[in-house]
Amino acid sequence: MENQIGKKIKEQRTKANVTQKELAKHLGCTEIMVSRYELGVSQISIPQLIKVAHTLKIPVTSFFENLNDSTPSTTNKDSHFKNAFVFDLDDTLTDARQFCGETIARVLTSIYPQLNFNLICQLHDNIKGLAIPDLYLNILKELDIKHDLDSLLKLDLEIQQQNIHRLQLFDGVVEILEFLKTNGKKLYVCTNRLKSLMVPVLQYNNIYGYFDDVISCLDAGYKKPNPFCLNEIVDKSGLEKSEFIYFGDSEVDSQFAQNANIDFLVFDQYLNNKNLFKKLVNMFLERQINGDK
Image (cartoon, rainbow, N blue to C red; front, side, top):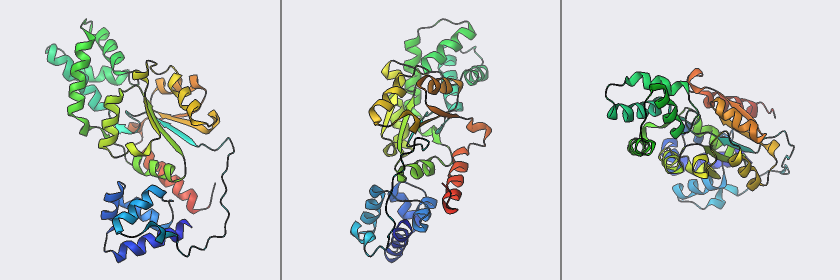
């Protein structure tokens, strides 16, 4: 069915003189993803199909006319299949390491000009995975400085809000989210970043709509690696823990998932040329094309 719908999308798009690039802009995805829809390699979701119909000024029902699909629809509920994917944000979905380190360095050197900017950035890199307040506390301790934390966090917040555009997605993030969502998976973001800083980043990068929920452990009062927020996601989802997997980038993330007793994958985007998700997308697509499970 996906292949037939894909052909209809291409047929109607061509008839309307709309390019793949133009259609991708309306859908909030890449040209590559539009191509995959049209080839039937990736299954398009109903909300995205409605957007296609709206863009091409045709009824959405036109994509389902005269479909010849005699294969019954089945849903595999085996526990080894992952149906819920939970992501950390900084350094997992977004390229944030340099920006966050430089923000802390800007805050501290604006108050203490004698401090070494690059040293502060290095100290940040050595303790990645912590909530922003804890990053400041650890760095202040290393520098043997005592300062009011609230005033530092206020300045940090101002700098981050003014520079949301610097938090760019890693290659392949949109494609992996689209791939998972169109295959009926539940998606979540669960991180120590304040929700007031997390949501603007997701919205700026046009991926907020992919997620069933976004949770700030810091706002909830249970910072990672306390498993409270992960357990709450599981409880509200109606799924088994065996159906969940957590994606993160630090030791804190691995402890977080282990404490919640769910599977996890912890990786370093910076040791994978910042394109780990792009590799995963290609792997999933290859398996689909070859008919593997």
